Length: 568
Image (tube, rainbow, N blue to C red; front, top):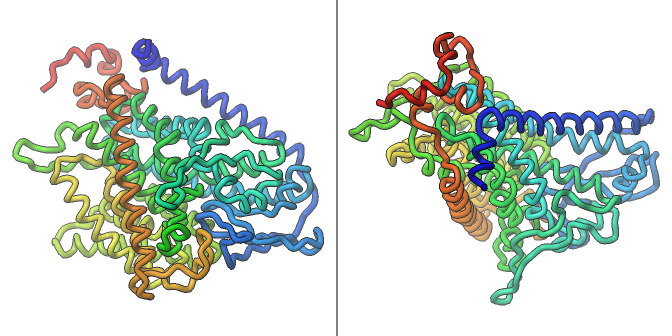
């Protein structure tokens, strides 16, 4: 029965199903926009005053920075307490959330702020599309674009159905003070965290409430805002991971992979870091600094994506013609370098904004992100010059993106000079990893294993090495700033970062390998060789990325004649 169902979803039937799902989504968005316009207000309140001094709320905290939001004096004589929220999510006081629930004048202002930051992060998906299409061959451009869209849709659906519950479903259980401050209800619906006590310590590992975003009325809007802020980070992880499947991955198989990433693989590790899990609690439970610190997603988003890219690349095998018989490595250049460079620029802008919104001292975070990206690109340029080669655009972009990724865990915890050094070291690590992976017969068209995996892992360690000991007070409920080994001599934070980085790789690799193996047995992960040679646009999507690439005779023959041709 399963095989019949999956066979039905192939080809045009899959395309029709996706169009129907997208139509429903856009219909719901239109209804939401219409309702928002109807409930709008003519008031023009003063802008919010945002200031961050601590991550502690009544002695408790989340694994991310706190953002203190102060009401203008004209609104009400209320002195709000500091509030914490997960990465990239501006926090709200109870009175402000209740004002939103009541439809008061503060609703439009607060909703706009909560939506703006995640949407700037979501813009990186457009950058991914150009970046990946630019490095694909023209015959696969349509498949590359569709793969990104399908992965985004299925990943978000999986996250809505169960992933959000796994990641954030226990924040009310692990951090009651957070829920009392952010959610207006006396008892949050996100209040079930599974865990166990072992060797005198409590180990929490996943949430179990909030499936399908089912919540009470009073906390519905705040929970939705929390979902939005986390879902866009998941989208980045899915887009980066699926880059390893370009030009040979079966569309339906990769869609199911994206669903499983959103429903289980990504949220599980994210819970341990951002949802009140055991990695964030290592500071309290074991005295290891502030526990695992990853404020913008170097480990949760990028190392996870790079590890999944490694699993996908190993499961699919190399593209036809990538490796010769004598272990020679053949270059398969992309078809559009302007696409590649423009995509990299969009990613740079979006990720700089992500770092700026994730921290209170946004100016320093943004500058450090840019300096790290410049350092990564610089070292790639110098390596090419030292080898008396032309600076290939693809390698320059990988150094640029790897540099900014390496700063995601600690943009506001380090000095600008340290950011530049971290970016330079990230560029070196990425160049080495690219050659290391290819020499072992692993084909990674986008360099996701190196840029996201190695760059993210280095970024995790960099937080424990270069933290200057003056910022990060109260992160994960620990008093005092985050202290790095090189500048303060404290090794505890580095130990926590190393444990978190190793845990990410091992757990994500095992879960990803299990999922890909299951899909292989049911469907098969890779397209037929004949289709790969001719191009995947028509056979996988029913349309051509560039109509001019195929002549009229080829179009009239269709898929049937292609399959009958002998494979060399």
